[in-house]
Length: 265
Image (cartoon, rainbow, N blue to C red; front, top):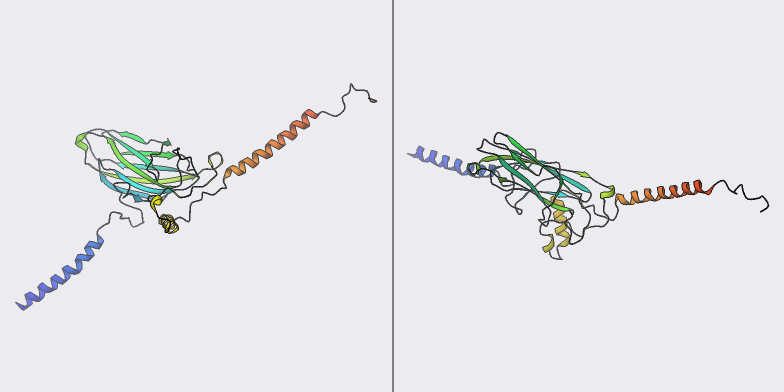
């Protein structure tokens, strides 16, 4: 009897010790793979999973879910968002759509790319892409220009057969950007990057809040100063205009005194 009680107490102690370990090993909503890449997506703007440019993010979901990610974009960058959805066996075609929103949750238009695509009933995957406009340093209040700050990705199915609703799917998202200058560069600067909650911060913690937002994405700051490539191109254009003027004057000036004028005149 005594041996049975000792064994029972020992098993109980082992169970209590293993309980927290099992709880700690379960993945959290923002779980990441061994390489640090996120393996889950958010279900709304507020719970969007943060990813970096150049980072590959994956997520498992169901047909009909809204999958959200967020990424930072700075002045002079032209972000490109690509998504691949792995589809299961289904009864009919499905149409998937990729939307990108800025920090004010305004839907941004794609310059080009397959933002919406229909996959046939026998297709194993569908690929989507959206190339945004170049991020500007400033914009008019009435404009919908892309500005530096946080951008949101939303991936969802918009048309499918009713029998396929709720089927498991796998999604992969990657964001890259190209630095654009020259004619796309815009002078000026934005007072605050378009990030969630930046407009409701009090004046006392303004600097701390901005620093926390910037450090959350692992960036040193937003490069939205007054200098841009347009200064260089403007200077080159001025030099070329001056050379053209000098060349034109040399061609039209002639060799000097006209031949029909007498020497003593």
